[in-house]
Structure formats: structure tokens, C-alpha cells
Image (cartoon, rainbow, N blue to C red; front, side, top):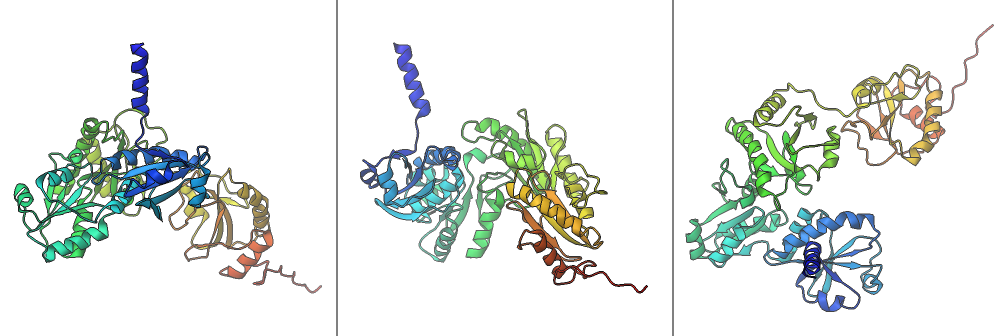
Length: 488
């Protein structure tokens, strides 16, 4: 009996959720208990809701311990149609922010845990929290995230500038300020702005506290915070990935600063050692660690579809966004050599590419990453389709595209081409966000997206009009030229 009770208790503990659940019967009464709360309206069968669920749960746990605490709730719209109808829910998931029991605004922030936390933290309190005593201050700096504190002797010009910075950046960073002599004396600062690194990221390779030493202007303080808030080797997540400068070197492994801080920092400190060396040498390179499970899509782009083992794998992007992969087993020495080779231009960029095909008999030339410049040369006009093998619209277009290429096969200055954009790296000047995406690249010019019709005659008329030199077989109006009569 005791064994059964223990199992039930253990199961209840393991399945406990920090996300509140409201129904038609209790929504009005429970929502009024919260100054600020985020509510997700969902359907159990919704794929996007299932994807959001673990991120929402992580955010709820973090925000539960925020100062002030912020609650997250959810409503199952398949079982609670009254409340979902009242708030005009027509798709899932729908997220709304409530204040004092009333709907305040639609939530338009990120849908990953970090982004939800930052957005709701900014919505919940003032841009900068006033630290009225030492306990307040110690609690603020002991947080999981970076924090910026202004220690001021009064509401002077520096303090007013600090508030402006906080108002501009409070969705990106936590801010607090003190006018207390007790707090300022305890921390040893007066009219200073200080960046505090969270305990989980502290190491012997860099200072845990960084004091601002330049003129106190909004522009300069904001730049200083942005430049230093990632440290020597930042924790790169889906929410902040775009804030890391290039060249970027990322170590991917089981990064977990909640359940395995020691194990995470074991590997991160080895990256830090290398990062410190490059910084001391005055070399510009950004280092980061990322959870390999959160960045499966990115690892696939580097050709690392299945990463096994505990050791980090390393990949990089240079200033031109070219991709590079470190071969061999991870060690500080191999990482240092890899980064040196990257900076010195001694590495071959990684390119996701299908094998180069034989195009000699193809009217529609097949482009892959490795032969793109050959198939799409600068000295010809090119119409190129970016497709996906599973795309129904692409399959419908295929016979028309082949007919187009057959019609224009004698046009030596025009190329009709296609590329599987799921199996090859697409050059950055071609923005492919759906299939099929078609571009026209005029001779010697930049590509432009084709927005015309998708019948054979539509393509012919477009190319006849846009061609750098008039087509041999078609006039500028797209009509076929008549054969010239010859005298007998």
C-alpha cells in the first residue's frame, strides 16, 4: 500500500505543471487574481500547440520565480467554447495578455521559452526595478540571466539616462537601479552602471561584474550593454541567435543550465579557454555554445544530421555567412587550430550539395550548389526554378517547364534551370520561402523574383520582353518570328 501511494505521489510530482488551466466556469474569477497574465487558447489536436507546449511550460517555471512573479495559463477551446468565443479565438494557438482581469493586448512576441520570458518580464513591471534594500539587490543579481544595475546617489542626469536605456532595452535585458546608500555601500559603487553576469556563466576566464567607464549617453550605454551581454562565450538560444556577431564559432552539445550546470560548464570552459586566447590576441571572433537538440535544423544545414556522443561538435560562419565544419574530435587544441584556419582563410567552406549532374542532354539544366555558377552564369539570361520534390505545385509546373525549355533550346543566350532547394544550399541573393520560387537573372545583373503567370506562353512572353538581347525565335511581344523567305 505504501509503495502504491509513493508511486502516485512521485507521478504527481513528475507531472506537476506551472501552467495554470482555466475553464468556462472559473475563467472570470481566476483571471482577476492576476495583475498580468499570459493566456494560451489551444486545441489538443493542434500541431502548433503541441510544439509550443514544452516552451510554454519552461517559460511558466521561469516566470513563476520572477520578481514580480508572472503567471501563464491555458484554456482548451474544444471544451471551453464560451470563453474562447468571448475573446474571438479563431485559430490555435492564440495568446493574449490580460491585466487586472481584462484582456489587454494580443501577444505578438517569440514563441520559445526565452522569448516568452523576456516579453512577459517586460510587460509585468517597470523598465527598471528599484532596489530599496540589500536583500532586493542580492536577489536581483542572483538571477538566471544577465542584469544591469545603476547605483546612483540620487535622481541625477546619469540616473535619468539610465532609465531611458532601460525603457529602450527592457525586452532584451533586466534592469534595476538603486538610490540607497546602504545598497551602494554594500556593492561598492556610486554613480556607476554595472553589468552582472549570472552565476551559471561565471568562470575564471572573465570578470563576473563589468563597470561602465565611458560617457553616460543613451547611445553609448546601449552599445556597451549589447557588446558585453554575451560574454566570452555566450549561451546561444533560438531567441538570441541573431545577436551573435560574425565570424561565429558554435560548440553544439547537451547544453543544460538548469539540470546540468556543472556538465555544461565542463565543455563551455574549454571553449572559453580558447576564446580568451583569441581575445587577448586582439582577434575578432564570436564564440558560443548551443544545445544540439534545439538546433537540429542548423546542424542539418552543416551536414551533421545525427550527432552522437557527449563531446561537442563545432561549426562556424564567417563574415560572408559561409559555413565551416570542424572535423575530428573536439579538444581545446583542435578548436584553436580550426579557428586560426578559419580566420586565415585556410578552410574550404561546407556546401550542402547533390552530386554534380551531367547536363549535356538536359533542356532544363539542373543546378546544384557545387555547379551553380556554371549553370547560372553571369554572361547569360537565366530563368531558374527553386523547387521541393514533395511540392504538388512544383509537380504541376514540371511538364510546362520542360515544354518551355524545349521551345527555347535554340536560344543560346537563355538558360532554363531548376534546383532542388531542399537538398542544396541556395545562394543568399535568392530568397526562397515557398515552392516553387522562380527567379530571372538577366545577363550581368542581379536576380529578380518572377511574379508572372505559370503557363508556357506566360514564360515565353516574359523572357522575350526581358531578354538582354532579342530572342532569335521570338519577337519582343512573345510572338514567334516567321521564317525568312529565300529567293529561288
